[in-house]
Length: 376
Ligand code: GLY
Image (cartoon, rainbow, N blue to C red; front, side, top):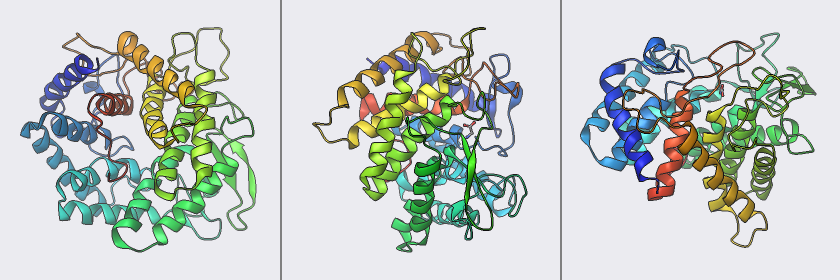
């Protein structure tokens, strides 16, 4: 059932290798990635190598491996030269590039590079406040006390580093950060803040806000999806049932607030007039996250059917209404993602992470393949 969509995606990845060359796709511009390629400097640069590794695992065609290995070399340079790496997204970057290579090939150099990346992420651990600072330099007036929900997807890098080295300091930081995220980013009705602020000196909680959502108290849909997948992964590593429960509750909130065609609006609280932009990438993330969550749930969990049906409806809608299946010239896989609607930055285009999670979900459904967030 998923095969046509997968084969179509693999063909597009194959075509894009030549089109993108040494550069990296980020978001589309007028329906093309090639107008906005960058030089491995964005938080999104890991998703393209992640897609290359997935394509290699699925096809075993060395063309994909060769392209992915070249990308890992570029990630080695990026860490060595400290280029655009002063943020928390190091988990996204290195899980899908060098950690993927380690998982697939047990390449020692890739493992060492990934461990260095984990050390780099730890430089954002704030001892006084006890959290991982998302953006900006230490002590920054605006950003110094800020955490964001997306960071849950960066924690697997730290959990993995502890597993790999036996040094539990990475996992300890990850657990404290996950717990703080659960307590302060997730609200009582299972919706979420995009970001939350703490006093930098005392660690005292100050309040929630948004960067990409509709307003400070709204639920930015992609953030909710990051929470679903991220808490499921925190459970995968820690087996603390609170994280499984949090992922599940956030997933139900997400699914119960979908529009009729089952693909997310960019913010759950955005007014319906004028018709809001969709964020298909949030739906792609939640499909991949639901697959993880459902695998972890006890077989008699009372919410299993609701989640399973939500997954099937979402992935079917993505495939039939949003995917570019059959359009051979398209560079992207999923139309109608949004990066930053209020910021006017790619409010309706391809998002490379949407493409990545869509492919990850399809390959898990078809072959039981997983992404590169943990070693299985
Ligand atoms: N992690 C940034 C975003 O989801 O836009």
